[in-house]
Every structure is written in C-alpha cells, then in structure tokens.
Length: 514
Image (spheres, rainbow, N blue to C red):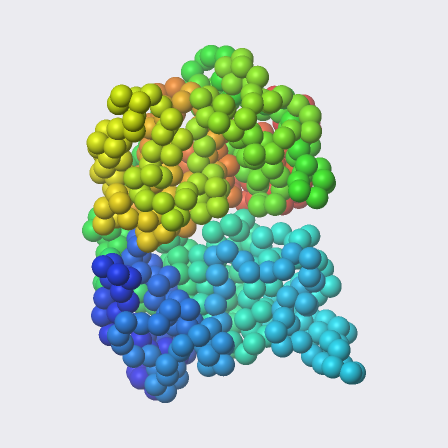
C-alpha cells in the first residue's frame, strides 16, 4: 500500500493487559476511500486494535499515522479531532432525545442568549442525512426507532463531528437482510466520496460482499491482508482458525411425536413504563424441537424472555413446563425446569468481576452434590469447571481469572457451557452467536443440535436469519408484541422472512396458531 495513499497506518502495535497480550506487533494499513474489513476469532485482538485507533486504549508500544502524519491518540476526543469516528456494537444513544438532539450532542448550534438553536439542529441533521444517504426523521424519538435506524443515528453522530475515517464494530449483528443491504449501499456511497470505512466483523459472507481489503487477526497477531478478489470465505476461515469453513451438515433427528414440554398460553407482559409489549402470545415446543421466535429487536423479545424466566411478571396468561405451572414461580424455582442463555451475557449472563470457575458453577452452587460434610467441595467444583473449559474450548489463562478479561466469544461459551450442562428438559436461548466468531458459532450450534437430539425442547430467539434458518424446526415471527407468522425453514426465503419481521407481511391468527 502506497504510504501517500494511506488514511491509517498502525506499525508495531502491542497492547498488554497484565499477563495477557491482546495485540502483538501488529502492522495495519488502510487506504483512503476504501472499505477495509478486520476479521478474526473472538479474542483475536480486533476490537482492542480499533479501540487503540479511537483513543479508548493507549498502546503498550507502536506508532500511528493518520494521512501520513505521526499522531498520538490519547482519547476519543483527540481521535474525533483527527477525523476518526467509531460506531460501537452497543449503541450509545439517549432514548428520550430526538434524532437531531443525539446527532448534535456536544456540539449543539447556539441561538440567542447561549440557548440551543433547535431549528438549526434539525436543519443540520436533515441536511447531513440527505447528503450521506442515511435518511431519517430528525425529530423522531430514539425510543421509537428500529435497530437499523438507531445505527443510522450513530453513523450520523460520527459524521456530524467531521469523521473521514469511520470504524464500525459488528455493524450487521442485529439487522434484517433489507437493513444490511441498505447499510452496505450507504457504505459504498461513502467510500466513493472518499470516506474511509473500517469494519470489524465475524460474517465472512458479508466481508466478501462489501470489503475491498481484508486483514486477518489471530491470537493478537496479523495473519495477512488480502484483496477481496484474491480470496474466498474458505481461505479466510482457514487463516482465522487453521481450518476450512466447509462444515459438515448438522445431524438432526426427527422431532418426537410427543406432548409439548413448554406451553405458553395467551401470555401478555408490560415494560418498565407500563406499556403493553407482549400481547396474547401462545406457542408450544415439543421435546427434540427447536422453535425460533424471530423478529427485529424491540418487538417484545426481551419482555418474552424476562417473563418466561421470571424476571418480569406476566400481566396475563400461563407458562407450563411439562404440565407444571411456572407462571407464579421465582427465577430460582424455574431453574429446576428451564435453562437460560440470555441475550445480554454481560448484564444477565455473567458476573464479570467473578472468576471463570464461579461463573461456570453459578446456579448449581446450592446443589448437595457440590458439598462435603456441609462445606463447599471446591476440589469437585474446580474439576467440573476445568472440564467445561476443556470441552467448550474456552480460551482462558485459568479458571481463577476474572471473566471480564476474556473476549466476548469466550464469555458466551462460559454461559453456554454452564446452561447446557444442567440437562434440563427445556432450554430458552437468545442470540447465542451474537458477537461470536465463525468457529465458536459453529461449536455452539452443534451443542444446541446435540441437546435437541437428546430430547430437549428449545426455544430460540434470534435476529440472525442465517442462524434462524439453519437451526429451526419451526419459526414464528414476533412483530410489535404479537406473533404474525408460523413457517418452516424449508418453506421460506430470508427475504420473505424479513418481510414478516418488519410487518410488511402477516398471517391470519388461525395460520399463526396452526
């Protein structure tokens, strides 16, 4: 890459966290006006490298040049002054503010007597949205927008601060196929206008669709930078993981002809504001079946999960497990019947400050099997925790380190390992592969199919349509708190499923309950 054409050059970048070296002598360059993807397994150092570029972390060693000039980026504010913007995987928006208020936050136009000029704020946001192709209503409230539109607001925020180099962390993780297409069209347009785009992603199919160059990281080191036209998804997977992405088909047994194990009848629930978010939802899951509830985020999935697990009371309806009424039971009581992999591992799946060992035995620490003479049998629990680390290929420097020091994918493996070893007859699992690389995703999918084949009734909630179509025996779509479709994977395309998810197409109540 010619030096005079480089928007970003990172040379000899190292970053150490205690004994863990997240980045090891990385050399990374991005041409001005290109779309450059960074791929790698969880824990490969991708996000760490980009957090260094955005000033959220300082490198232990190494140099950075922006547009050929040596710089020291000591904070996000310094990065923004250098024309660098970053859109994080978890959006940072104020729900009660408008689009314009979020976009202009921190650099609001001033009116008379040092007041904020709201009309000018709306005008600027509208103009920027039209120029960038990220069309959106500047006066809409953030809390009323879909995930795809929230992402547009985050990108507009970065552009409003003068970003010429835009970093996107897992930008398609929660988007429908149509939203992905719209985002890619915007990114291509920005690239043609000489904006430089860096994408952190696990989705190799999307990499091959959108990127100009692709840099592969593995265990904190650079494995190479390739032109898209000179590679394919199989080679990328081999460089990432040391093996091909051509996995064997998942071996599925026929769904058992048996009475449903999980039955939900006319379930309704409200959010923290008292608004109806789940409306008269009914479904059944048989042993050895994966029923997926698909939908765009914000359509009642969180309320459904919280109500099933007992974190939120049902306003009406029933939840039955093998004929046992769980509706009034506590979270702890429900654990005897149902395992749970939550959608947000950091908030509800893990204690980030606790050790790997403590997280792997959480929920079972009261079991008599773990006690000897009335005391906690640490020897036994440590053997159990280490066996899960080995079985699930969890990359950790030991079972006594804090979970916060692990990558997101390895944190997700801890949650999956803990919940799957409960061997309950019901598993509720949400977004199992979010933020997880292709190898770990495949491993988790194989584990889910294995427990399904052993007769577990699985309720899956996912926004990843590839995952939905791969794992599901049946799919029901949740839109604005109601079930609007009931289909089988072999009978529907991703595009048609996307129409149901966005409310553009619905079935009759009779078809949904069939």
